[in-house]
Image (cartoon, rainbow, N blue to C red; front, side):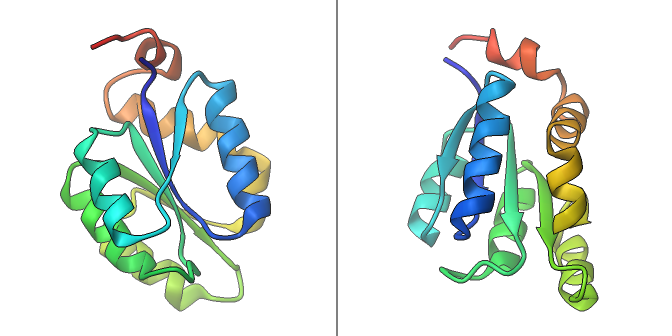
Length: 130
């Protein structure tokens, strides 16, 4: 079974990009579009989480805080015109916080960086079975 990546992103364009990048690295994306789905996904010991700070379905800061509190490393992203929200994401526990433009350019790199910090590469984690 491959490692999971929690995706807390309502924007379908970014959700699709993140899903594609995760799959290309051998990871399984899990969409968490409600607080309950986030809690269920966190219980499954995901590798990392990717959170849009402008999430509309529920509080992105709560999602970041819950994930980081569960020991999950978080990549948060948002509009460059919203520095306060990006700063709040870092304060809530996100390990990497970037503007959307940087996410688009370097998403696989950020995922790999979080995986390495969490104890392994995507290839290592994808080949691990339970």
